[in-house]
Length: 245
Image (cartoon, rainbow, N blue to C red):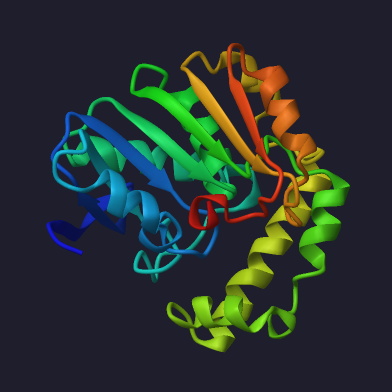
């Protein structure tokens, strides 16, 4: 891939790894799910919309504590999503982008919604993929089925092996599921569901009907809660929509 700028910037006291590509006037920030590097999880979008003449500039970054934004520690349950949102906005400001649109996948979608509420003048549009504004008991149960990463399908383990040792992968995934369980127990699973009405920018919601991790019911909840939003459900889609579709 050509014309990619990569680097690290100190943001909110930690070094965050970022990458950007493209020469267009419209800036799109891609926020990945937990553990996965954004440049990998949004690779098709990074390549297509980042090409010369597309009209876009694509920015990605690894969340603190993940990928190339280590060894910084992750946040606690109380600030798990809001701190990532603050990191994202501070990074975009440091890169010189005062306004931008956001594509968020899975955890990144939750962060994108919090970002849009916290910095409404900065976020122009939202794309939410396989995203949720709260963690239900069904969600927790689904995540718990994946706790032992040794039981994951080989192709998924191969993907994560590009970024982490087996031991570190298990450690980070265990900590993540423990945080989710704490959010469910202490805060009734709430991430930002009471703030959906505060999202005022145009919003596109994408979800796979066969998503095994995040129930499609979350997509309808977002549609009902975000005024003027548009929902597209892909009948054959699973969790990694932006990679498969």
